[in-house]
Length: 151
Image 1 (tube, helix red, strand yellow):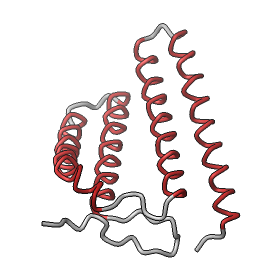
Image 2 (cartoon, one colour; image 1 turned 90 degrees about the vertical axis):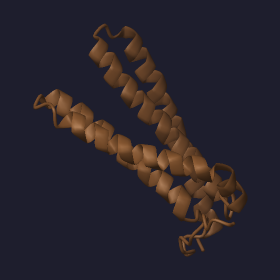
Image 3 (tube, helix red, strand yellow; image 1 turned 120 degrees about the horizontal axis):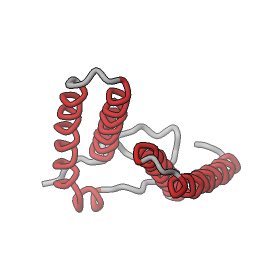
């Protein structure tokens, strides 16, 4: 079990991470508003979106630090069907994006489609984790099957 002092230190660092991401979001918004080129605006919005995601992941980390087990059977049952559908959609969409990427040799387009594909891969991994792993505060606790479906 991690010492409480180090948990408090980790919480402070995660709070700092969230604040930094929020500063990046604000700065990116100002830059987007000043930019004239639509491509630049879209790419900056993608960065801004990732910063929002990072802040939310930090908030999820804080939730894990606050509770021994934050996702249980009740929560799983509430969203299981949606998680399964979403996971399947993410897998299919990843295949679709790979097909789009194969249609171009333009480096900028290859880069953009690769970024989308990588994000879809991450989304699928997050959903699979939610469906199959436990979220435990104790670093020594195994990631057991949190989502053992009942009934």
